[in-house]
Length: 166
Length: 99
Image (cartoon, rainbow over all chains, first blue to last red; front, side, top):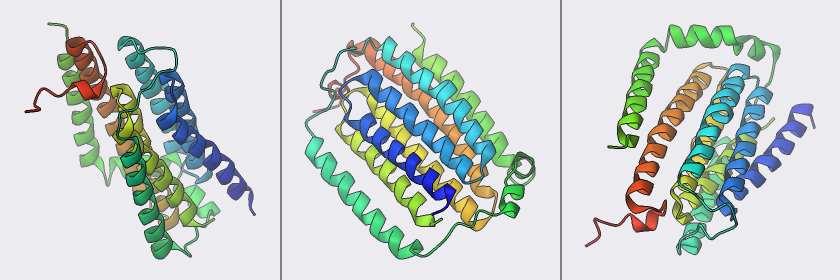
């Protein structure tokens, strides 16, 4: 068992616990903090997979911006800070649907990618540094990049228009 | 390292997100579950990027992160509007189209 494998399993257990905490916690602030556990775990998984830039971006944008935005949303909707029941009466149908989906996905994935291995090599490390990522964004994917920046601007203006108080 | 372990971890996160979207009543908690699903997709993209040794997967993950930021901004604005109109973030009460 390699070091990467051990790191993967530690992070995977933390992320799985966090994900269950997000959907099962009876305290809304705890649910948001469990989401932060999952997001940090994902960032660490990207670094294990040698995708350093995506890992750092995940850290800054998700934990720095999105998690804080969620905590503001919890405050502004005056959510109860004490444990309360946030579930509707579809708990069992929802559990059946998600377990069925998980079983189907696992069966299909094992069937399709059962023996495939990820080779973490020095050449992969060289080719996934920030420089090649930037080259790829600003050469091959420059049009999607511009489209996504317009989308972000439109979403920002739209959020202001929707949330304005008049 | 097997590719499958990443894919199954991401499938697990995605299914937790599906459960949360279906079973939660509070609008902020539904948005948290949507974030879980978006993150599951990102893990897949980065794992396939390492598997195929192509950088495109990482670039797509960056795009997904950007779109997630936009989605949270608009989503929380809508949640605030619902809260202001109904005085509750409870999605079961948003039923004005019900006949």
